Figure (cartoon, rainbow, N blue to C red):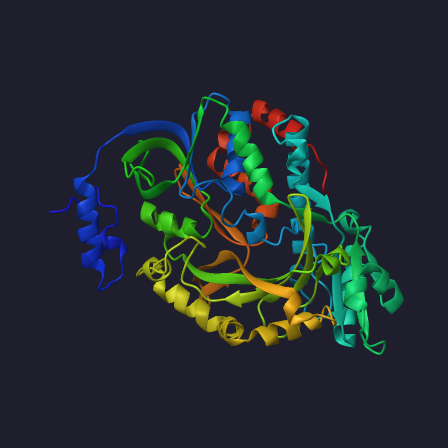
Length: 505
């Protein structure tokens, strides 16, 4: 008989499924080879991405004596959502992303979310500057490059909207350098590639901020972790898979880990756990069986991009240009012609095109989504799907469209585009939050959300964009929620003030 207290995957966690017997049989086989090796830590961080790296360096500065463990199931850090090729690297400052400034029913523009995101990104930049100045991040990491952020629209309705958006945002200090133009010649100076061979009769408009950035979040992540691993109180384990979490009553978390290279299994006891494992965070949160996870589900979406193969074309476009999603299409569909600088080399990409995959990570399993269904989240997920049927239709259409159709979409931004100059690649896997809603039954939430237990011993980050750009603010929120007494002390306030001393009003 299998001891359900030490199971890797308990039948209680699985909605009735014909594969339960197979999974439990596999579990029993693993348990037979179980050799208990116990480890202890103060802080255990699951996932070696930008979130865990940020939280790790914050904690090490605030609690230098704390023993920290970081576990990552892949062979190195930042291989999933934090990887340069798996995110847009825009540095979501809301300079060019229209989905952060919706138009209200009365015609006015809501700018509150844009300002909030811009402030959070400024906090991130200031923190990275501190890390570089204190030789935690090497200057040669080349993680931040200045690239203008431009919004481009066509048609009188969208032009009117963009002008209203500009007039509302330019009054705020963070957006005061924004420029607006409806003049084709001026716009051609900003984005010559996009204006080539474009009809002079087409009405277009654009806004531009020169201080926009391109961010290599993978370089930041690796820089921080390379610094931390030199500390004897920090253990960073790659190819280590966390497969079980259980809170001991009035005690630490009991974390089950498998070494994917040697096959060894061991247990770590930790006082505090943070789950920053990208799309896999939901899976681990469910395994922890905390009540705060009830009602949460996830919807996985793949991102596909076209990458330009011709360096001459790439050199002609030196901006990040975001457009407007078509009517009835979700915010994640916002097209952008994007100049990227990765490890010192410039690239040009266009997208996103959505794909459908049940995986929660690029390196995940096709069983990720089916095995995430629980009795408590089935209804919220069904209702979220019902209220977002346009998203389902959008994904189906995206999956069915041909490469020729993809190029036709690209031509709306780059009229001279030729199919032979572009190659398709798969970017990151995103898991959108689905959760309970009192009125609708369930909702699909865009953005990120931090969940923490009532005893403040565990926190997890769910969701996607703006994600990495607001990592510092997100991890400060973790500290506020899970270490409220300490963050209110003069000592912690002083250290944080030194690291993030900025006025974003």
